[in-house]
Image (cartoon, rainbow, N blue to C red; front, side, top):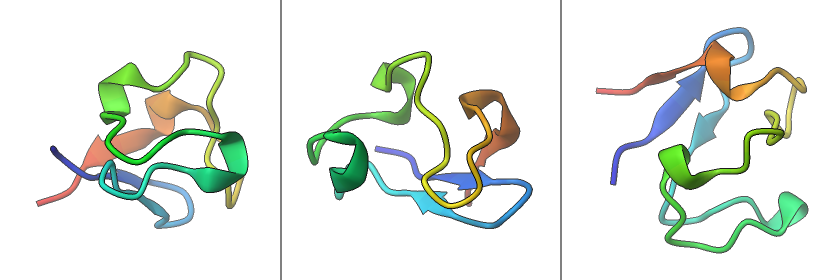
Amino acid sequence: MEKFECIPCGYVYDPELGDEGADIPAGTAFEDLPGDWVCPVCGVGKDQFEPTS
């Protein structure tokens, strides 16, 4: 599964880890995150993320 980086702050969402603070279990693909999920560091929405290489 692909990782996605927050453009404003550089946080990387790693689907292998999920987002424990938002009760997102490990193994959750970025595309499967809820629409209202936000960056746990700076609070921007999913539209501010881009795939990492």
